[in-house]
Image 1 (cartoon, rainbow, N blue to C red):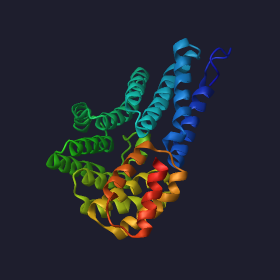
Image 2: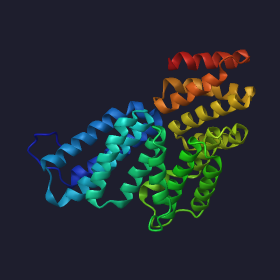
Image 3: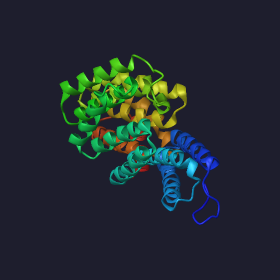
Length: 306
């Protein structure tokens, strides 16, 4: 896309260039964490918005340009959420949602709203998160894999709100929908909502409910799956959740193994949300009598995060 003020207008090649940039940013996020990539994504989103505002585009590509800009906004909103910049994430989500609706891109509106449910949960707006999640989880016009994602969002917010029976029921329903597999109606972006993602949330849900022993095999499976698919950010956050759970469960031997594995990742990854999980785990480990290897690893994590 041309810089503001350039003579040429955005065209089909510009739209394709934005799609390619989104793919590059997503791959960098997977390997480095959102903190390393979010500023560039946000700049690209703002630049594309400026082109739309000033009308510097070929008329024939207007909807495609709106749609790809909405997708860039979705990615920016997700990265801001992962960076715990929740107020800014909500603002970007609202802007991306308007663009997706203007483009008639229903699938992208679902994606943005699924992220907004996450942001609402993280910022304590549980009622709003539940309204979004329930609405789309119960709408038969929405493809089942997308409905499963919204049901998962519902389960997680109920877990954070302390409604254990409701959270477990919602998660069971999410799993049943997920097990139906992908269909031709599911949007292209739904590829990432896979078995690893589901089992990782199953474990994290149980951590939020205080059912730490039940969480351990689930989070362990998520860690192994992330190792297999090379998704470094997922490996980082699953390991952080596993460390939190094993320390809560008092499994010192496993905590030592997980903490040692996390240490080298600290220099390569930048994810405020994962670091928040690690601080929570460190608080659980504070004051415990631990083997020297575990104590050293926890101290290294503490120093790195400070």
